[in-house]
Length: 249
Image 1 (tube, rainbow, N blue to C red):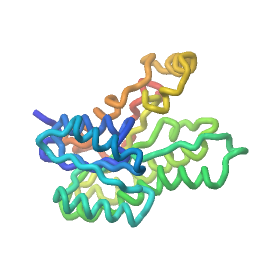
Image 2: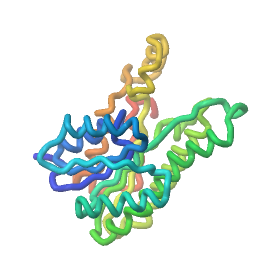
Image 3: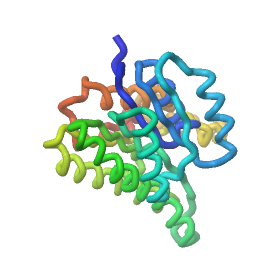
Image 4: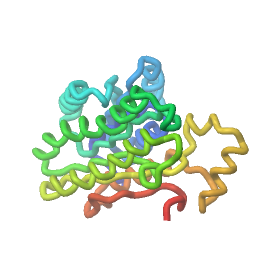
């Protein structure tokens, strides 16, 4: 039995990395999926992804900047028009602009906060209206273990990811009575395009600090999203699920 059969999911930043893994797993689990990309360079990747995993259910890509309030509103309206409902929202869009605080520019701070945190406000704000009408929905926000324990050179990223956790807990209290759940996933070190740039020595150093002694895979995060998005997670809200191989204890 497919865990997400009959459900419609909207996934931001779904053309690569963790987002792509979530899109692929959701399709496997029977969901119809709308996902976003932000740059023209990602358009071909999005089209290729649709060709690769397209199944019987609907799968569509949208160019949309989650950090833009008006674009987020237009996206929700378009997905509702195309799919008729949104059962699951995954706020996955995110960037890094790493540098030490003494060197960090205002632009680097603002860009990360807008993309990582304001986008969560934007999409959540606009998806609540249709979910309230449906009297149900699951909103999953992608944070990071860095938002829990901090990291040198990532003050902007850590602040944005920590903010997501507080935001999600507040939303859970606001709309829980209407059957809408809000949870956070905090990935640890996940093998993505960013980690491919690590040297073998750097990779081994990271793995040594992880109790399971390996980097995570996008599928590890996607499986957690499936659980929280499905009816199996129907009594879970306001929580942060760390997918980190034991890095957080």
